[in-house]
Image (tube, rainbow, N blue to C red; front, side, top):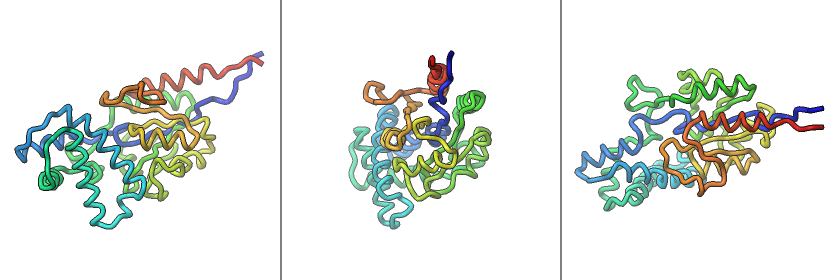
Length: 260
């Protein structure tokens, strides 16, 4: 006789930015345009790859004390350092003045309105989001969003079709903790009554999404939309799209049968 054990994955939680939606134009496109206006030569690919290092810097700093909770002068200092790290990682010669001018020319992601009349200056939903969430729902798997954001992202998400099927939307600004703090994950797990061992989180930030989910006792996966990560360097699965993620989750579910 065969007995079906509890489904290994009962909940999939998603990061929001660069996982479900992306800034348009992308961050590195904005910086390339800013540098062009300043007469500074730059390479698109270098800026795109260096963006990973700049985002890691911001993740660490914002995770320690959220930017929104810092004095204005401290926020500006961090934004300038963010630009400095980015230019340095891209191999662009720079001084303090160029960092400041590049900062002024660049509209950073965390200062961009979430809802805009034009796609420029706003966000676009990745094409694979709706099909992925539908497949998960049809398999009886719950879904939720866990986002680091300075303001409640619920209203923004509800403008997008995929959000209507989410079981929960968690915004760090509302709960008072930023990923990778485990309380950001518990804010989804506890209300939905899911044991962390039966939940998986996917996001684009190794230092927040992956580290935080694993520390919370969840499984984790890294989404690499822009092909910038070496899978061999990560302890979790790395996917380039959500269709691969769903295949992974459903494959686990198919093996949740044991003989008894």
